[in-house]
Image 1 (cartoon, rainbow, N blue to C red):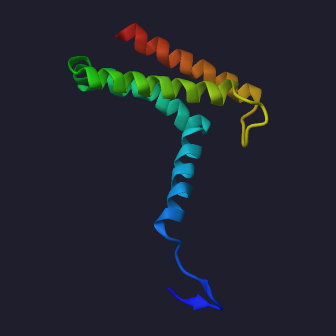
Image 2 (cartoon, rainbow, N blue to C red; image 1 turned 30 degrees about the vertical axis):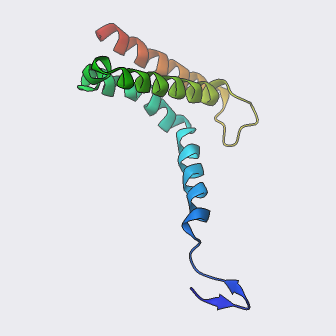
Length: 113
């Protein structure tokens, strides 16, 4: 790491980069398409793979699953109906399409279970 006039140059220490990575992941999860995948796609992963049997067999798995659904639902509600001056927020028509697609995805998964 080189210094110029007492100031360090070069890559930032991990402790300074980690919050940026975490914020980037959080920002990605709050976007409409990744959030739709988290909310509706996790149902397909749960019911179409052995994950459901594992969650039903172990209490810790069941509670982790409930925590995931709660977090995914809260993020989805924030994306669809959260505060209006949110950064990069989609318009009302796009949010209604997102809500309709999520309802359809949940209804299809619930009807075939």
